[in-house]
Length: 564
Image 1 (cartoon, helix red, strand yellow):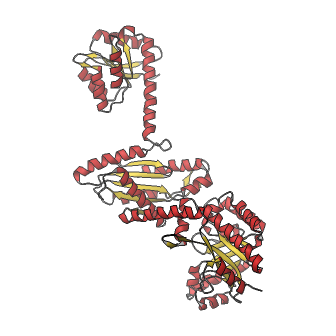
Image 2 (image 1 turned 90 degrees about the vertical axis):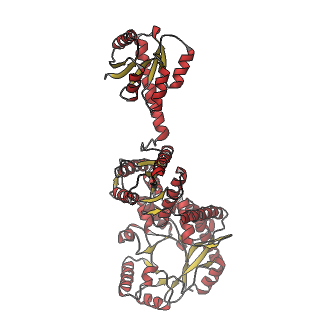
Image 3 (image 1 turned 45 degrees about the vertical axis):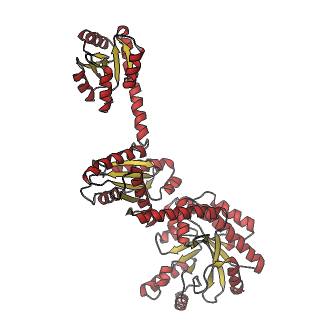
């Protein structure tokens, strides 16, 4: 067993010899003893932090062991100390323990066994105390500083830099779409990813910077002494580069990771660490709204925007719970005859005070707030019930298409929700189309394919929306049981250009070879209508035919124009 480094502070040589002899007689444990015979030398040695444990006499000339303990603790000395005294006194015992002593022993009762046991237990308690203290101020997963320690570091940095007109920068970042990784890959994979992200980002920090994990997938960096004003931005670029290579996880998975960053400076009349961190958080949130995988610098206007968004999120939750989200319907039209072949169900929200809200905004809020599944269920059940009522009212023989989000498709209850909506309404599965974008292919692909195949087996149509943008690829068309391709409006807008017409013609030819129906979106002008007919498109949608309308108005249009 390795020798323990022991400091013995004792001004009586005879007592030193007795203690040294006792230590030497301890079996199975060696002690490397350093003796100091006065308080001054003893304090200097203790403050050096070079020893595993310290034994000190209570009486040290004009000083006491309590004096040494108090001065040692002021200098943040962590060496555990045991006080020795020639008399038994509960007052001295309590005073020593309050000053930071780990234990108190009377010299007249010392034996090698008692001394060894006391040292051993003291070191064990010291290790436990150190671990508990570490966990109080560090994240147990990554072992980075936690929020409490980070805020303390920011406060210290602000105090230092305020004296020389420098600034402190806090950078706040989190992993884009981390919840999807956790949900689809499992929490073990998520935890391993967090540890690897922490290591990579830590490797590109400056020596004086502090990286902390605040919770979940949220991290923060405190940067001070920024003589180079571009240092925070340079750090973000290094961090983004560090996270670019694929992450290989212990559970046998590989994932690609992006992150959004926000930063805030202490020179914006901010000297409170929590407020500075909140500003950086708001800036990060703004970066996510700008498209993720980017960064943003805090401005006051962001705070106002966030307050508005928080209010909208609260009111949207209430509207979803109260089922006051409206569903409007926009027709799909036979381009040759003008007959209505079906309708697309689209959610609409009129805020009681702010009025009509942009679908892109409130659906995005629902996605980020975690209420998209509830919103999706409401739209699905409403749309299916409406289509069923049209069947009863005027023999509607078309289909209703319902948009679903990636989170809905990866939700294990989604197929059951579709079955439930069909059973409750009595609508034939063949009259329902589930519409989605290819962003679903970035999540749990196996689960998505399985869910879509189950729906296809029921007879439900499967439509791929916004084809030709973002993640679109022919491999996705082959992997999924797609019956409809909806060509993005951006291609229709370029129909007057040679390349635009060529792309549209290529998509139409491909769809015919795959026996998949193509629907052209965003038709607003008659010349687009005729040009699409000439390129082989048979079905279209757009303002040229009708906008999305409430169910009563849409029903009139559909009844008047549905094919006989």
